[in-house]
Each structure stands twice: as C-alpha cells, then as structure tokens.
Image (cartoon, rainbow, N blue to C red; front, side, top):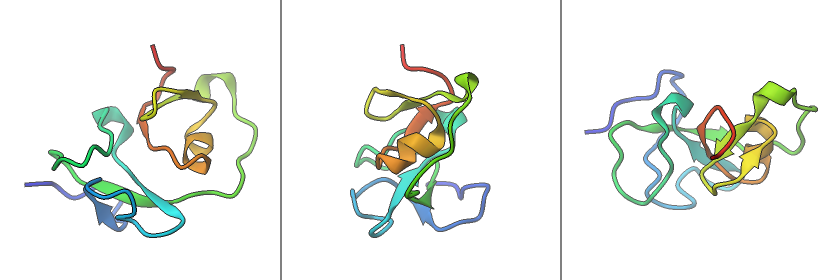
Length: 91
C-alpha cells in the first residue's frame, strides 16, 4: 500500500497522466528516484502546480527528469510538465 507524502499536499500515485488535474503533475520524493509509470508505486507522490515561469537556476540545481532530460532545476522540469526522478543530471 502506498504511503503518504511528507509534505501533506494532495496525494497521487502516477497512474493516470491527468490524475492531478489541469495545470498540475505528480511528483514523487526526488530521493526515491520514482517516476509516474501507470503502475502502483511503493510510496505516494504529491500533486504540484506547473509553474508559468522559473527563476534562473544555479549550476548545482540540475535535476534528471522522468523524460531522461537534464533540466536546469526542478522548477524548469515542472514548467515543462515533467516530474523529476533525482536531484542530479541524467547519466
């Protein structure tokens, strides 16, 4: 059974692309390295709002997106509608 996210926001399991509604996506804890896959995960994610814009990111803020792209920051990944799986560049 999925556990609740630590932030206490609306929970999601990543089972449906629009599970969080328009303008939001399902983000799992970055340290878990889990992406929405359509299969029941071990822990629940949190619905987060897709930002309209992001501040400039520092060089050490890069994240690996669930799409396999290295994004400048978590905000930039979310702005593209992509959840992040880890807080470092993709391999």
